[in-house]
Image 1 (cartoon, rainbow, N blue to C red):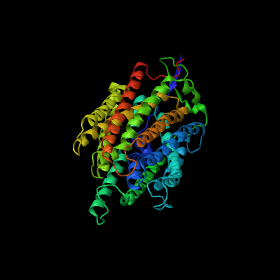
Image 2: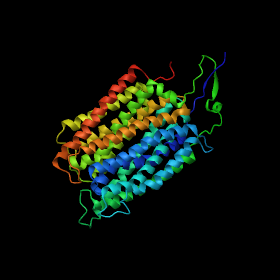
Image 3: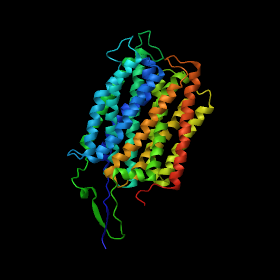
Image 4: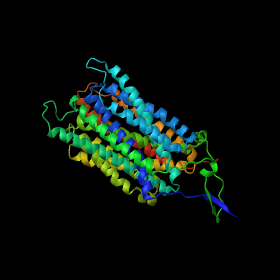
Length: 463
């Protein structure tokens, strides 16, 4: 009796690289958003810590709300250009037109303008940016289970995507270091010091414009080199080939509401949220930890993140063979142990200096890269062949991540000992505790969730 199974999908090396280039603009902007937004608003523009946190929260809420909506519409609306690539193009345009205004002072403000008015000025640009970012992210992620079918191919494509993420972050920090270096070399202004201030406004504006130019070029490469299958009927989405040896039951088609009944959906969503909290909060607060806690010169906010992402890039190269050897869950556990090692080091080493911070950065970078790639691979594994509702799944995962990150930043900013730009002695311990205890605490929560996945592996459509 002749039976059928879905045809295996794969990509050439060139196609994989073109696909991975599609998130490069998002990665460049996200790197600046998480690493430099708080320190830019607080130390450069002079926002109070709570107001700076509110602006970041506005962005996270906008992203969180837009993400599942974009995912739902991306699954539902077909387009001759491709339903994923169409949303990707729309998102790219939104990012390009809005992001330059975020890292630029209020054009209609002066020294007497209240900070709440400045928040009103920045908010529309942040909302448009986050709408575009969400559209680009979800459409790009949703292409993974549509372009490839095997679990190892999904891990490889996710690792390739993350490798480009690491390259994007390395690009941001390298250019930032060069700009700081040129600023110090051409220092004829006595106001330019090793501390951040309003004199650094042109530096951040230049950095943002350079990143937009590079990112737009990579987005063009993605749209030219990635071919999305444009299907006109359900039968085209479920290509079948003969397979003579075993019977395969027909695979049910899941509407988006069905995912809400799947326990594995909530397990993976919680693990992804914890992963993003570790990665994003550590990235957000590493700059203020370096400048306010360790009292290092401002060029370290480019050097240390660069070290983190170089170590993450090296790690990403080994993820496919390692995950095939020991499995996705155990690989995630290895990365989580590296993150917990970083948190423990920061907590017990009360005299962390400009030398030992490099070792801690390597641990955090390698661990963050590993858990992020593995959590995305788990999400792709959860979706499996249910690619018609894949954008909703990615959107829902991202929703929990955005809200959790936004609320976390506001809570941290609201309990900061000093509300002004001037740091008091209590800030030294405050940001060390944020980097150590928040990262470590969320890491423990992720470990507990991973334990449930080891007991009850990912499966859908059972009962």
